Amino acid sequence: MLSTGFLLLAATASVYGAAVEPRATCATGQTVKNAACCALFPVLQDIQNDMFAGDTCGDAAHAALRVAFHDAIGFSKTQSSFGTGADGSIFLFAEQELTYGANLGIADAFNLEVPFIKKHNISVADFIQFAATISLTKCPGVLQPPFMMGRVDAKAAAPDGTVPEPFQTVDTILARMADAGLTAADTVALLASHSIAGADDVDPDLSGLPFDSTPSVFDTQFFVETQLRGTGFPGSSGNQGEVASGIAGEIRLQSDHLLARDTATACLWQANVNNQAHMAQTFQAAFAKMQNLGQKNLVDCSDVIPAPPSLPASAATAFFPAGLSHADIEQACATTAFPNLSTAPGAAVSLPQIVQAPLTQGDCDDDGEGKFSNFFLRFAN
Image 1 (cartoon, rainbow, N blue to C red):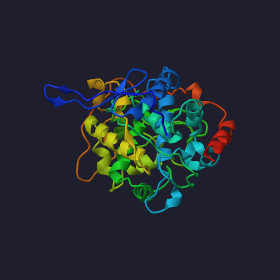
Image 2: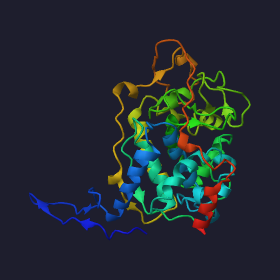
Image 3: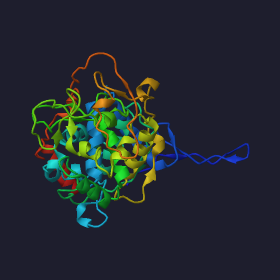
Image 4: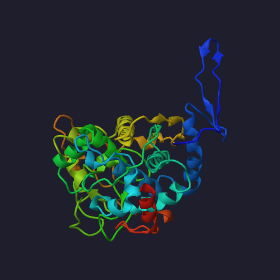
């Protein structure tokens, strides 16, 4: 798929009797294990300098991370009609898939990424997952993410129903994830992504509502704050898939609330609380597994991925938000007590909304219509 004629392969050498692994030298000067990975450096530069320009784990990074899951989960071990996993179908067949209720808000990622996809000679499927991997490197607390390249673009849309919905039961969600090849532990691990995320369309009148009090830091606060007793809503009540949260300005999905309290997942959920290493490691593994669903014969291009920013030691320690304590926790894990945490000083405040990235606004709407959709339909055909 990718031309490597311009590459120079580095010769094998021996240093003090130990063989040096052969590496390819790219036209842009970098060296990689596999020459095919050289095609990613111009894409990386474009994403870093323009698509994520000035974004420090903000709205643009959040959008790129979310769409990676929504694309990859279009896969089933038992039903071939469910799609071919991380195959780019969510963009290639946007005029269909963006009309699905579960994909409400994915138009933001479409508007963000499509202009850049059109500039580069890699598959749409690879671009979606590559952009998501780079988005993680904007967020303090993330472990170095791996990346595999060589995904094949979809020939058809994934059907409605492949993406779990926030109003579904835990059993329904876990069954869908298991059918795609992801365990209950994988599911909880992947939801660590909500520590660096916000909701734009659950409450139709509000956008950029954070899921925890530190939405630009990959830390364990999400797992603390979803365990708090719900007391109110950031906007209106009665929205499908939303339940009361424990902090003013914070949104809580019904699915997160239930997974934190269900006997099948409560202890998996609580295990992340104030355990940054556990959360980061399990997320790293589950996210890599998700990115490769339905795909074969991939090339390891992890050496292209830049290092994420380090997490300050103080940020790795979980806390109760100001004004709250252990008494506000709804204990759910039957075998281990919820950890003792300190309470943040000061008075309780309402969390601000996440500033929306201008590049997420564009011609594609949540109904799947827009001029770029037509381009991708022709491209797929």
